[in-house]
Amino acid sequence: MQHIKDEDFNRIFEEMFRQITCPEIFDREVFIEVLRDVSRLFDLSKGVTEFYESITAERMKDGEVMIDYDDGREGVPIMSHRLVTQNYMVTKTTLYRPKDSWEMTEEERGKLEVVLRALVSFISRNRLEKLVERLSLYDEAGYPNLKQFTEYLGDIYAKSGLDGYAVLMYNLRNFTLVNSDLGKEVGDIVLQGHFDIMTDTVGDAGKVCRLGGDNFVAAVKKEKLDDVINVMNGVPVIFDARHEKRIMITSSAGVFPLPDGFHFERFAEILAPLFTATQEAKSEVQGNVVYTTGSESQEREHTQRIRMAFPEALKNNEFHAFYQPKVDIATGKVVGAEALCRWIQDGKVVPPGEFIPVLETNSDICRLDFRILEIVCKDIRRWLDSGMPVTRISVNLSRKHLVDVDLVQHLIGIVDEFHIPHEYIEFEFTETTNEVHAENLKQIVNALQKNDIAVAVDDFGMGYSSLNLIREIPWDVIKLDRGFLPQKKDDEQSVTALMYKHVASMANDIGLECVTEGVETKEQVEILRKNNCMIAQGFYYDRPLPVTDFEQRMETGYRG
Ligand code: C2E
Ligand code: MG
Ligand code: MG
Image (cartoon, rainbow, N blue to C red; front, side):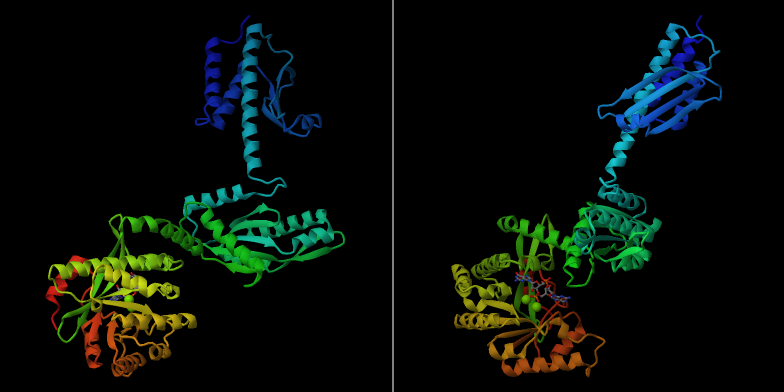
């Protein structure tokens, strides 16, 4: 006689399959309810699942035993299914029924068997997934690994950002000595002992994970950072509790206190600067704890990007010369201009501060300077040919040129190629403290002057100004840096004002043309006038202008 209605079975069976085949809708509570329904339907008293990570573990009874269902009635095992996966993981479920329950038909047994097999296969897969997930978060010795670390950090980042966190990477100092002096077994105990101290110190304010060997990473809230640094500076680690034996362990650590609003796309942006800082800490030059701001690696990336893009940009004529007028403050006439390089990339103007320092790390800057000179010569040629007003244009030359023995020849070659009268060209050099460079600079300046090309010392007063450089090198023009120019707050007796006065007067006495850079206000123009420095360059008149705007300025000038 049949005890189970087909529709009841089908309903429960369908729900069970929905649950175990769709991880998206899987709901533990619903699933347990389904199991209960199955048990009631077949009048089961108990369901027990055993789970073993290997067949050996099964033999040793070293595994998990889960009671899936137990209604408290005495029962006997009526059906069991054991599944061994490819990697020898064992899942076994046994179903129990009371002895005096109704007799199941063949068909009912068949149905129960299908349910049982589906269930075992589901539990087995589920366990396997959990096991793999767990294994993937720990290393072979059971320490939380890098994956766990990045997941931990990634979760916090996604939820609330990393404000208030510091990340560190550390290495136990002289750990090879511990291994060789005390043996590897003690080494393992010390490693674990140190790890335990660190995890205790960090508590729930962070996480400590092992990178491999005696290298670890940790994330920690900044308020715990001092405690952590104390551990880095040395803690006693017990390796033989019975005999109270301990060893002092210090660490070399790189520390990256994340700035508020810290944004990253790849973990390498955190780990790479940390790695560099840890290497530095290991070298002991700056002590055993080295801090990083992370910007070093951003800078490296920026450098890399600029360097890669430069040759293409040069080929595509993305570099332009903008002209900033030099104005005679008495007449308002444009008496010259400085060519300043602009990189126009995808319609956006990149200011020189972003790429010139990069190009100066190799000789790319020299190629750029030659290009700017070419552009300037082309513009002057056009002005001459079309009868427009023309003034002297100064071109900046990097210090990198100072070691180029063919520099003067190269520069004059370009100027002559466009048949530019030499009086229209001026070159600006910044000061140098390097003696060899100073000697070369002197020769270059002399050679250019022999060719009737004017030479200016740029940014005078910035960096390591040396009066010697003024005495030794016969400049034509001195450009006073805007740092020299008195600001509103400086009165006439301020050091800045006095220095400006004396430097301007020195320039005049020596017979140098004196240009003041960075003139921004009317008051500053008055200061120039009072100090007899009659040429100004600055935002008060104009910013560096695209060539067509500059051409207009040459025509109109400014009000004197
Ligand atoms: P620099 O040669 O001293 O050029 C003057 C800088 O001061 C320019 O910055 C200019 O825009 C800025 N400036 C001018 N007037 C004012 C003002 O009133 N107030 C303020 N705050 N700033 C003013 P820029 O164009 O950003 O160039 C920066 C530096 O980059 C230049 O300093 C120069 O050293 C370098 N540079 C620019 N173009 C070239 C180039 O073609 N070759 C080389 N080697 N260096 C270049
Ligand atoms: Mg300049
Ligand atoms: Mg300057």
